[in-house]
Length: 44
Image (cartoon, rainbow, N blue to C red; front, side, top):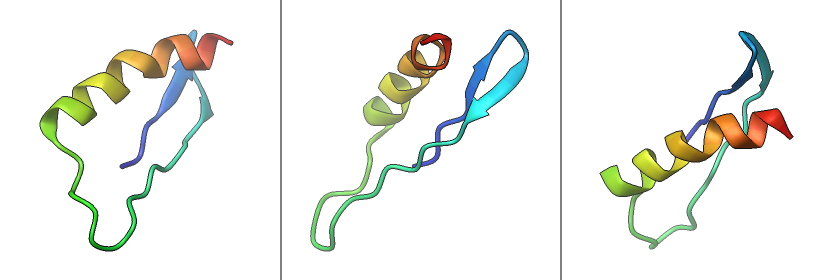
């Protein structure tokens, strides 16, 4: 899952979250949570 970290209209970073082989895929809830965290993470 890729998450764009954008603060004040500028891209700050693009972390990539990976799961190991045999792990469950990211869910819709995981994507929603990542989206909610992206702005506060970028502001740090």
